Length: 419
Image 1 (cartoon, helix red, strand yellow):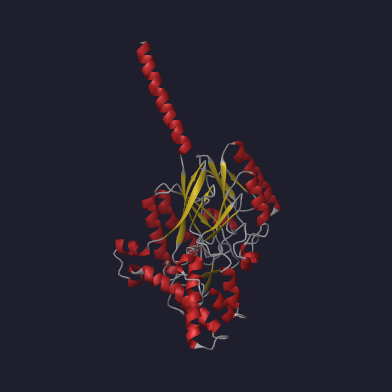
Image 2 (spheres, helix red, strand yellow):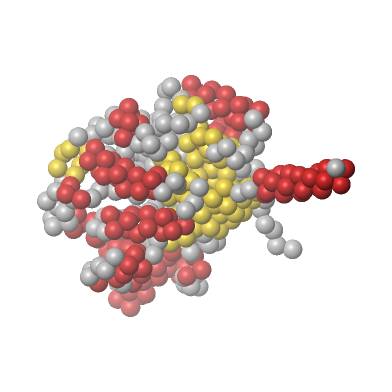
């Protein structure tokens, strides 16, 4: 009997130790995307001057194929099966109810597969006006209210959270794995570009951070606007007006990761206490999403690209643009930037050979800047380009782009330093 008891004790001890160690080493896999700017289905047609102009306006928004690109992303996620997918605002192109309803229906595929999707609104999602494009031209449509946003996306964060802010669309989701996800509504006024969190919401955030700390959990924080400065040219409209205050507050309670969008660039800024990651706008080539392995001792982040061509082939698509999407998608964005660059530079550069050289250089740099991959571009002529383009708005913009030329597709915490 004693021998049996000893054997049982050893087995129980081993199982307990194994389970405890496994729990301690457990990680959470989080995917983050932002700025999908979705519109699709019967509410969308590209046959018209308004959307055709999108091909040359310089923003690089791939509106024509956004439904296919989103389907490709969902296809990849159903294979990858992350624990969470966070969408940090600007879900819709311009806030139309039909766009939100169509997007929520697509996201339901992920929910039905057991993947938790959490969303929050951006400045394009809740507006006083909303646009659809059934004939390729803009038509006024039904906008949605904040209450309707929460209702449409009730299965994607607005049901099941541990706490909701009564004054905004912010909420806190408990992963049950040692971390709580703070989804912050950073809109000062819905439809406006600028963002600010009001005092009442700040008080709620601090209460929830204290509750998180008391439970022994770590806070992961997300919003639409950045907390830290990524490009000084865009601080006024894209950095949260009281971002420094919010950054100080969340780091005081142990947060070291903040996820956002709005800028459309793939970029991150790290301080001694916080990493602020702006995800590349999903509407823009190469349609990036972030992959985070989050554990109690730290996390790793890597930005991946959506393989549109592989998805198109898998469904038997006959669209050559989709089947050769790496080339098509890059050229679409590059041609946008090239046309804008050459048109501006022609005002100050008369030499056709130099004009072409600098237009090509700056177009490539622009695509790499938004993609977070400066290493794709030879920067040896950067100074000559700036000197030749001096006095143009394009040169002023490119100066700020060249302030930070590191690749921004991966980072980690604790910060990895070179020996």
